[in-house]
Image 1 (cartoon, rainbow, N blue to C red):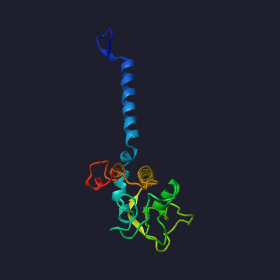
Image 2 (cartoon, rainbow, N blue to C red):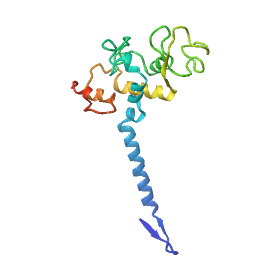
Image 3 (tube, rainbow, N blue to C red):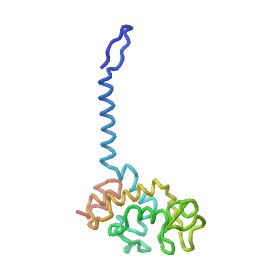
Image 4 (cartoon, rainbow, N blue to C red):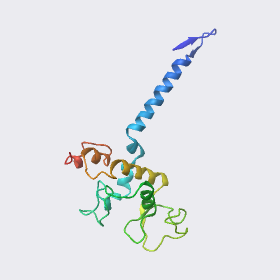
Length: 172
């Protein structure tokens, strides 16, 4: 709505402007709340980081075509901070690589002084940022951790939200 001024030029009605701004803000907030994990790209980080190579397509654990066998992240007892540290720093002496490019050198891991990574500690090709590690962990917490039963919806989260993905058709 516009009001007229003496010069004939219109100016927006402040009430209408306020209502449009509020509506746009609520719409944007609603979209973020509706799909937080997908908005952060957690599914893309999961696939692009190579996590499924060891932990299975749906974080169910290795053992089929996955090698080496990675543990199920659906049954993990690690909390959010422990998952962040494990993904960031890997697990020295195991097949779990570190995924933060600057781990050990610029980011302290497991209380080890900054420097070279410990022997038998592999670096992933993912080279995640701290924000990406946090987004990946949040995605896993929302879509896998503590959820031993795989449903079509939980499967779809790993495939861009596509509930009709052929890989998810076998789940209820």
